[in-house]
View 1 (cartoon, rainbow, N blue to C red):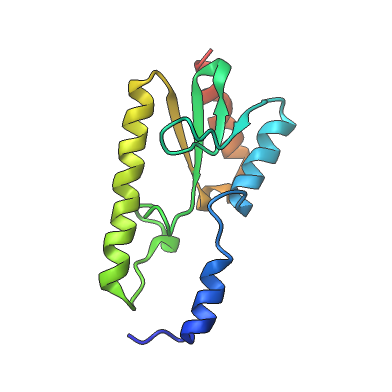
View 2: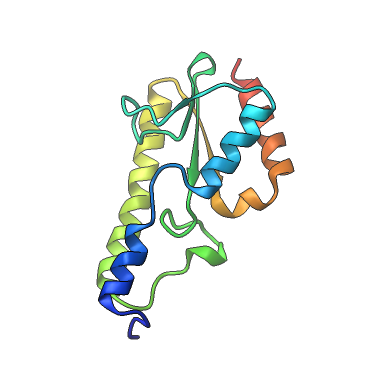
Length: 138
């Protein structure tokens, strides 16, 4: 299948995608800060540079984009139809790296929670999950 955008338009679109401060991550950050949790951001000394780090609780939260991290069963995680030879190894590599980083964090004594971009639509559910996760870590 042919890309519907020109290479220049596709490049411009892709250049606006960021790995930090996404809409989903900002929503989770506002939610958790609003209910009283304090955290550090993007600690590069930890495997995977977790989005939110709660040092006193030895807990981290990743906010993953469904497409970039291949969220199983999610409509946003469909494989592109163009440049399949590029995208399959790229996205599968992201998934393998995520698993490797989670194992490394757990081996260091950190607790890991993943919030998917599609789940941000239900902030009440995220709040309940995050409270349970963070309170169990005390």
